Image 1 (tube, one colour):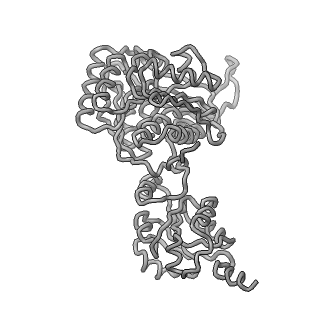
Image 2: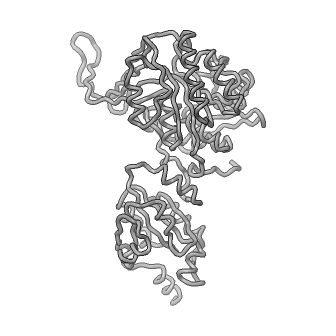
Image 3: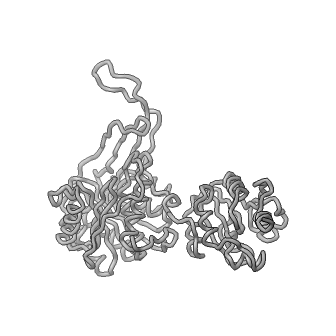
Amino acid sequence: MDEKDPSALSLNLNHRFLVIGDVILDVDKFGDIPQVANEAPVPIFVETKSDVRLGGAANVVHNLSAFHCEADLLTAIGEEDVVVAQELERRELSTDGLVAIPGYSTLRANRFFCGTQIVFRHDELKNVEITPDIEQRLLSVFQKLFQERKYSAIVLAEYRLNTKLSILTKTVVDHIIREARKKNILTIVDPKRGDYNIFKGATLVKANRADVRHFLGIYPETECEVEQVSKEFVKQLDLKMSIVTLAADGMAFYYQETERFQMIPHAERTRATDATGAGDTVSAVLAICLINGWPLPSICRLANRCAANAASNVGTTIVSVIDVIGNKVVSSVAELANLKRLLPKDCKIITTSGCFDLFHYGHIEFLMKAKECGDILIVALNTDESVRMLKGETRPVCPLSDRLAHLVESRYVDFIVPFSEETPSWILQMLEPDVHVKGADYSEADARRRHPYIREFRSLEAGGGRSTTKLISRIKQI
C-alpha cells in the first residue's frame, strides 16, 4: 500500500463509546472423553474445569477497555441474572446500562473443549419477545446515558438470530441512529441474520460472508463478488462505508464518498484455534480507529492483526494490544504515554539505554540477558546528536536509522525510544521501570544519582569485553 500504517501507539484513547446489544455468557468447559457410554454409542465428557466470560456486546466493551477507552454497555438482563453485573464490576466497567426484564435471560453458550478442540456447544435461553414496554425502558436508559455522557461512537452489536428476541428492534435502532446523526456521532453495526433494513442510515455495517448471503443472496468468493456486495450494502442501507470480513482471507472495505474498494489480506497466515469473539474485537478496533481518523486500509490491517490475535486463543478473549502494535519505535512523548497505559498491569518492565553503535555480539548478549530480567524490554536509544554530546564529533559511526534497524530486528527488544538529551531521564521517569539494566562499567550509585525513581538496578556482564570503542581502535590499526 502507498500509505504508511500509523501505529496503535498514536491513537488518541481519550474517547467514550456506547455499545448496545445482546450479551452472551460464554461458558467454556474443558475436559476429556475417556470412553463411550454403555447405554448408547456416544462419548462421555468428563469436565476438569470451566471458565465463564462475557461475550457478545459485553465482549466489545471489554475489548474497548483493553485499549483503555471508556465504554458503556446498554443491554437487557433477567431480574435474577446477576452474573453479567458481577463480571462487569469485576472488570471495573459500568453497570448503569443494564435493564432488568421479568422473564428475560441472557443467552448462555456452553462450549465443551477437549484440549483446544470444541467438541460441541449447548445453548441455554428463555425466549422472551421484546415488547413495546421493554423498548421504551431501553430507550429511557439510552436517553439518560446519551444526555449525561459524551460519546464518540455507538456500536450496535446484534447476536440473536431471531429479531423478535433481540433488543435491537426497529423502534430501538431507529431512535438511536436518528439521535446519533443529530450529533454527528458514528454508528457502527455488527448485525446477525435478521432484517438489515432496520440499520438504514448508520455510518458503517460490518458483515461476514454468511451475513451477506442472508441479506443479498450472494456468498461472495471472488474479489469481484466482494466488491459487488460491499457497494450494494452501502447503497441499500444508506451507509457511508461497509466492511466485509472474510475470515482467513482478511477483510474488504468500500467507502461511498470516494467510491474506493479494496481487499486487505492478512499480513501473515495464522492458525485459528477458536474464532469466538474475533468479530467483537474487530468492532472495537473499527470504532477506535475511525474516531482517530485513520485511513480505511490501515484500520483493516490493524483489525486483521487483532482478529488473528483473538482467534489464536481458546474461548472468548480480548485483544492483546501489545502483540498487535506492529511498530517497535516510539516516536513521541504522547506515544510513550500510550505505551505505558497499554502495557499489562502485571508485566515487569525492563529498561536500558545506550548508543548501540557498530552493533556487535556484545550488544546481542547484553540484550538477551536484559530481556531475561522481566517481560517487556524497552531500549532508550541515543540519537546522533546525543551520541556526539557524549562521545565527540566523530561518533556515531552508524547513523540513527542503522542503529534503529538493528534493534528493531532484535527478538529481545520490544520497544525503542530515541532521545536527544544527554540522559533518558524523562523516559525512565514516565515508564517507572521495575528494573533498569546497564553494562558492568556502570555503578548502581551512578545510575540512582541520575535516575532516582528506578526501582531496581542491575549491572550485566556481557560480550566478553567487546565494545564499539575497541572495534574502532582495531579498525584504525588495519
